[in-house]
Amino acid sequence: MVHVFMYSSFHKTSIFWYMFTATMLLLMSYSIINEKMEHETSFLTYSMYGIISGILLYSLFWVGHFFIDVLDLPFQKEVTKLYKLYSPTKIWQYVVLFCFIVPGEELFWRGFVQNRLSKFMNNPYSILIGAILYASVQIYSGTFIHIFSALFAGLFWGFLYSWKKSIPLVVVSHLIFDLFIFIAFPFR
Image (tube, rainbow, N blue to C red; front, side, top):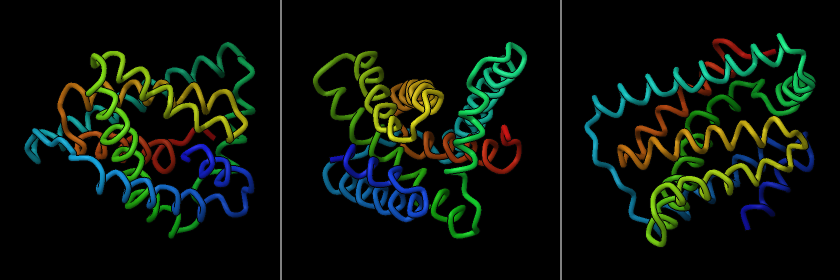
């Protein structure tokens, strides 16, 4: 089901933001209705860990991008393509990104998928399989770097969720990461 929605989102770039927003709203609603979300940290703790981890993840991506440039790896064109086709450009796109898409992704991929997987297997496996599933739907973007980036970020946020048992923490981390990668210091 998720693959059908994500294919529809990426299939036509002119409607990407509409379809992706609708997909995340649907998945977020499904997750809230069907899964009890864990939340074991205080506001101060999840805010602090979320901000630090979001900056850390962005820093790791920055290092990766630096090596892509320095080593002249063939991924710079893919990065440019991703920014050109899928970056938010209008105010409403930034609003839905920060208010619906980021929380929706974390509620679904960590709060629902990873949480369900952890009931049937050990945490390292639930983190890994959850991250692979998260990355698998990025195939429709048409770039290897997006799939790899999603896998890396999915492992990072999956570990963070498993460690602290806090959806708000991973949402804050994801928000900070997106703030840096789309607004403060994009890799354009």
